[in-house]
Figure: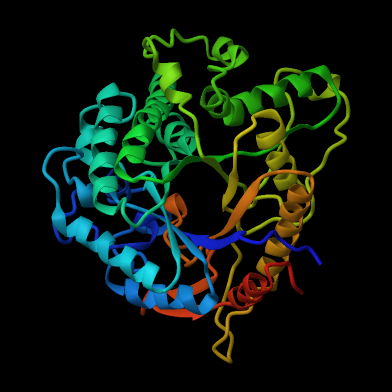
Length: 445
């Protein structure tokens, strides 16, 4: 049996825009995702997060379901525009009151809160003034972090500054598939830097306001594997690794931006000011890893006929997102975070899979593929711990079926099935299995 150490934390994760709804209630300001969803053609089926899982009104039911599953911790994010509708300045007390009530309910249920300050829902007003490519947005984030940690820091002892800065910068400002939908390399690079700078500035503020707090950041990482042993494929894979992984890991680990990727981008990087890199490299208490799949990289700089034959091929199994199921990648990344970067502690802050779940004639939702996915990945997590990795906890993505960004409601990741027309919640078979895992502190059949 693959067992876990005493004190290992078992949880599930969500994010504010994906579940809360109430997009314009009780003084909340507009976010970039509100604007993006309300722009025609940006999201599948013209879906929006206006209602989502209606968690803003149904949170007592959701906390009760967390307790039923046996969760020991809950990773959620706080909506910046719900707290500071204009991004900074006037505080919306109704927003703080909402999270106040949620914290108290979690603690009463014996569930430890892990709060993420930023999971992509930037106040639209700040975007109107330049968004993350503009340095004042990082300054505004510190103000926001200060307001929230002063209010909740007596109860929240695990803080995450940012979720997946790669996605915010790359998909939001270069690829354009996420809010705000821009496609500009210089904006992307500046956004990535200011996200990391905001993190570095906020960490000491959170520690001041939340004594004994543990503070970290969450990165989405993936192994980048050359499709063949050719020089071209190995170079392409290393470049992909630099763009996805090292661009964020290296500065956080006091190594600066990777020189090969700076050269690859060939841009002036004049947004980096004196002492910025020292600020970004503030010591962390932990790093969070979001892992879903790997990348098999084939060079596009060499004609296929002149490259070596492919020797690495994806596994047959893919999720509904089209992502290859590759559990070994989790082991590889956990080892890299510890042995190469020496982060003091690691949490798996997201890991999960989307499948086409349906309610059966008996009213149940059976999802054996998801159980198999979790089981395979948890075995790799246990293997990493045996190898000496300081892995402290695991958060399944996601607690609830939710608004899956540009895919709208077409992809279901939840332990809990949500009927979006009625808001009925049904624990899937994976939730019942996960409850047994938590009780045993081990991977079970």
